[in-house]
Length: 248
Ligand SMILES: [Zn+2]
Image 1: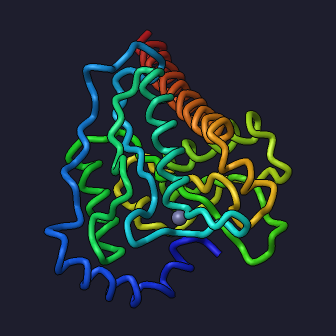
Image 2: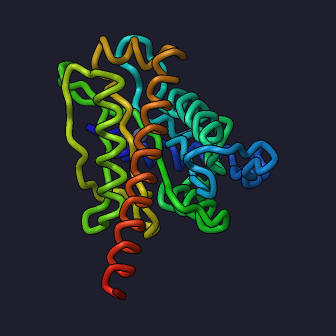
């Protein structure tokens, strides 16, 4: 069961808590976190603006790791920050939806809409939302990348990231990129939701808790994005070659 499906069971409780917290906190949302153009470097992703979303946050903890009890929202944030660093090293401009434990709104849909607004306002070219999976069977494992059905570029991006994660992380179970009906994938730019692994699987949980594995996950996602970006260049070059040959 994926985290925010499971989270629905707690919507009522979370809403009540939000109402109580609302009485003492002025607001939930923090100011938008600006990209850091001063640190932009040369690299294969130069010129691309990428929104990196650390899923859940605040009263929405997401999935809970079965053995350690750690919450998905914390691990998502750690991977998202590692991904930001990796993408910036490759030349991308990165917008993080959050760099602390926070939520944008008590309501799930309003919270996700605020995250998409950051992508719109920042004119993001690509969107990557980071999550951790869970399931009732503890045998299920392996990262999996989701895209929205009918979005060809998102499917290509998801396939490139899935392939890089399989090659670099060598999970016991090699899953395929899959279509998923997630609101975070509805913006219309190439968008993927990455389930980095299963917090319900004892082996994968241990790995996902370590900084070293989180960095490997982030690097694999970055490498998939670099591969996707290079494919776009090849496509563009092929189209240019076709145009120039048809002119002769
Ligand atoms: Zn999640």
